[in-house]
Length: 178
Image (cartoon, rainbow, N blue to C red; front, side):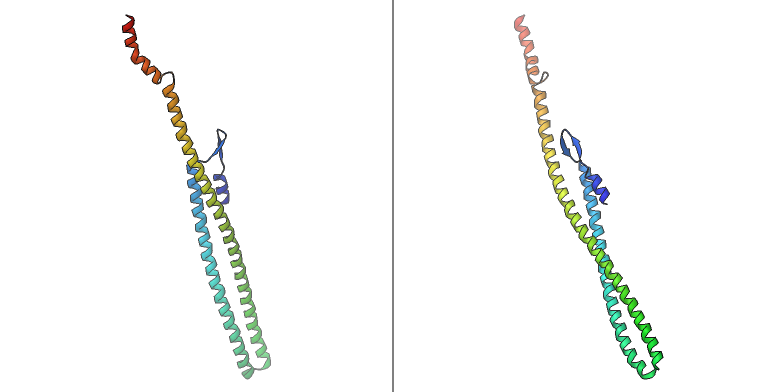
C-alpha cells in the first residue's frame, strides 16, 4: 500500500506549478479507505489474541490449581517416585502453556506497534488529502479566470467587437461615399 500511496502522490509539473489530477485524489482516498480497513482488521485480530491470552491465563491458573490439588492427592495415595513423575509432567505442561502465552503476548505487542504506525500514516494521508483538495480548488479558480481572460482577449481582438462594429457600419460608410 505504501508504494501505491507514494506513486499516486507523485506531482506532475505544468507551467511551473505543481498540480495533481482529480483521479489521483480519488485513488488516494480509496487507498486511505483500504488502509483503514486493514487497521480495523488488525485491531480485531489483536482483540482476538487478547481473548486467547486471557483464556490461556485462566487455563494456566486452572492447571496450577489442578497441579496443587493433584500434588496433595498424590502425596496421600502414591509412592514418592510416581508423585514426582506426575508433578514433572504437569510442570512441563505449565511451562509449555507459559511459553505459548508469552508468544501470544509478543504477537499482541507487534500488532499494537503496527496499529500505531498505521494510525500515524492515516493522519499523514488525511493531511495530504486536505492539501490536495485546497490545491484543486485553487486550480479550478485559476482555470475560471484564464477562461474569462481568453474570452475578453478574443472579444477585443482582430475579429472581435471592433470588427463587428466596423462590419455593421461599412454599408453606411459605402452609401455615404457613393
